[in-house]
Image (cartoon, rainbow, N blue to C red; front, side):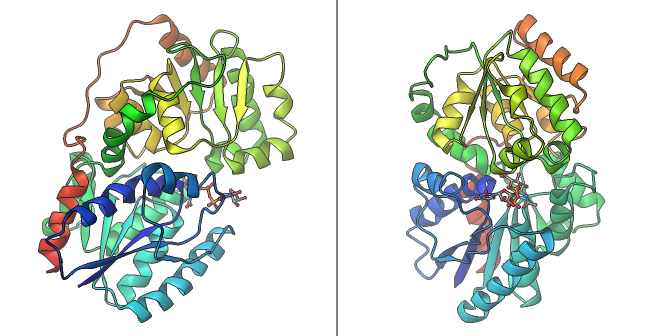
Amino acid sequence: MKGIVVAGARPNFMKVAPIMEEFKRRTDLTDLSVLLVHTGQHYDSQMSDAFFEDLKIPQPDVNLGVGSGTHAQQTARVMVAFEELCVAERPDWVTVVGDVNSTLACAITAKKLGIAVAHVEAGLRSRDRTMPEEINRLCTDTIADLLFTTDLMASQNLRNEGIEEHRIHFVGNTMIDTLVRHIEQARSLALPDGLTDGEFAVLTLHRPGNVDNRETLGGICSVIAEISRRIPVVFPLHPRTRKRLEQFDLFRLLGNDTNISVMEPLSYLSFLGLVAHSRMVLTDSGGIQEETTVLKIPCITMRPNTERPITCEVGTNVLVGTDPDHIRSAAQSVLNERARTSSIPEKWDGLAAQRIVEVLVLTTA
Ligand code: UD1
């Protein structure tokens, strides 16, 4: 038997790490070989190599080197390169994770070659079809043979879409497997100069819906500058956001009269350590909503919707959209309030990859 595990972009790497580790641990699977394929969607060392190093992910067996482009260009380049690879390697199954363009591209390609497809982190729905990730999720889940979900709401979404029960497996969250394995090491790292434990906020911003529009990005930057006068803000900058801040001449809003530290994207451990020591996180990321829930750090999500509603229902997440007034008042209430009670979703326990590999082995044997 031969399997392929695909990773393409930054948020994929922490999801494949525990799966690859579990295959290595399962020395009983002597007749199975697993290849790790990197599509090259993310390629900068800070967006890719740093994660492989921190998470000790084996070097990819193949890197398709597709790079950046429009959605069609990027998706198409992955499909062409991945088809050639699948024809040469003839895998029995392909596992894709998350919701990036590489996820969709490899799922379609494999399925059309008659190869079984497993999707890790299936069933998440924002119900916002202007998000490219939502299109990637819907299309990938429709065709995948095995759908591994992180929570029961996601499993129900799949049932509501008519997906048969035998395809759906509630296994937990591989990103949280990675967090569980690395949190102690991350917490022990020194904080950047000038920061005190529990007395700073972390900001991340990269959604096209937020950063590709001058007015929206400007509004967010202005209110963050205000918030920074009450609590220092650390801002690791995604390359997309850096480009937009330059293009729209908005860096001046993050300047000297604020208390914002803008920095390059951080490696996995440095970022996790920073979040774990922070007072709150302001973000438009998907995965960070989950990580803050497990760490019990208040999370203010600057989006109108989330595909991860469980983080609001039981976790620490609040959705505020991008209206500066709403962002300001959410930050103020975190700074003024005592700790809210929250809990950790079921099966976010560090064992998701074990469950996934078990199902994969039993189903594809
Ligand atoms: C992608 C995912 C998004 C995920 C995000 C995490 C899709 C549709 N989007 O968005 O779901 O949340 O990754 O980061 O797959 N760039 C670099 N260096 C890199 C990679 C990108 O400079 O290593 C720049 C390029 O200018 C590129 C832009 O960032 O055009 C956007 O990269 P892209 O992969 O298209 O999408 P992301 O915004 O990163």
